[in-house]
Image (tube, rainbow, N blue to C red; front, side, top):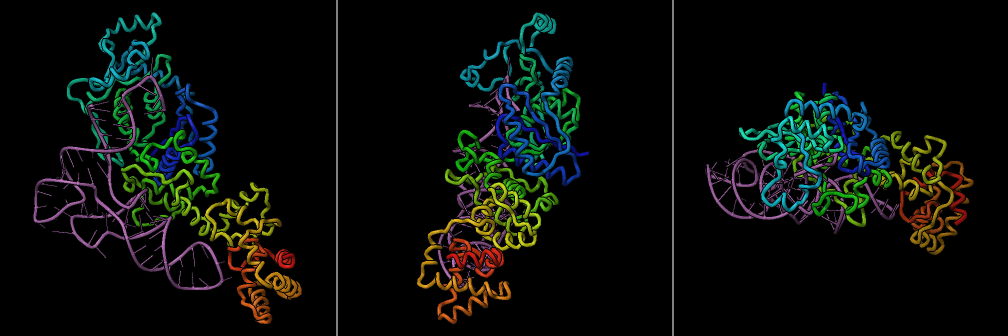
Length: 474
RNA sequence: GGCGCUAUCGUCUAAUGGUUAGGACAGAGCCCUCUCAAGGCUUAAAUACGGGUUCGAUCCCCGUUAGCGCUACCA
């Protein structure tokens, strides 16, 4: 049984890179009929915040990809400690009584190569170790990384291929802090073992940690999961994406607030570091799920293309527009309704009419927010008149002609695209003006906008009453 | 410093030991047209550098450079 997990730590809002990791885990799990576990890795009590936890849920909920099981590491500390002590009992770990920060001087550490262990601690006799611990002296529990014997730790990565590292290059990393709290490595491995995680999919920043994790799994006598690491998402200048340096781009909610369709966002993130290899770009969630595999994952970091002026990657914007104009109307409507309501507008009661309106205008929209802003004339009674639109109305004779058109439409039998067009062209011919004057004038009168859908589509979208009213009130 | 990972158009990426190195976004232009989009077409744009291996390397190997990651009692 395939089991994967997404394990964010609540130390900031849901990061775009984390969101992608979650999505890839979801795709992989769904593709193979596995179970997706959401686990909150909150062992760093100093940095955890409730706000962050809320933001993670908010982001994941919006992305609209449900998980199957949920855990919080802070509720499983007994397990972590128990397993850490098992490792100690088996002799794969030892107590390090070096005071915290004593070896912190970075200079010392880096000068003569890498730091592997604090002197004297690894070799301490069991008796002395027990005695000092019993006396209440604080210690950090360290893994006893195998030395000598040319031990090499190996694993196969689903994305990066075969990996190996000499044990002599791995330091004696901490398992338990002097506070008794487990470190990330300990908690993560203990939970992965306990929750029977069979496949770990996570960021490439954990690639070298994996050697340590394998050591822990072995010491635990647990089955070693399979691994697949994902290339990182980076800023245009090649640096790591950070809230402090790059602002809102790194947050999932930015895209939500910019009117993204959740699955357009999913589509975009999947294209960052993964490719279907058949030139497809726009894909539904289902299409991605059906073909997702590690073979399509690229090994180089991917740049999220944003600027200071615009936090949204142009390709993401384009994809959102593609989804908006091509997805089934019935699926789009609820999002538009929500967006209108958020702006204090009401969607038309008549579902068919609502669909008709949305369908006429959606081709030129790239964000859900456009429906409430550029779409205002279609859903509301008051709307601004743009300068360019005013200019159309100010063309000689334009206003008179438009009022006349309004009067004629008022008494007309029919009100369809064809009938309106016939009426308009007839008037143009009678008055010996170019139809364009009336056509562009109508758009200006009906929407206050100089640009927009074909004028004849406008009349039926705006509706008979309002159209006539707007023409006559010009 | 040590260890590890990576390197194709501005960006996301495809490809193969032999191709005019393909697609998409963004850019430029044309067409369509009642405007703006959409759509269609065209155009410009890349194999980091140096060595090998080979009849032939973008692809395989080595080195250089650069970037990133790990090197915490962060995750």
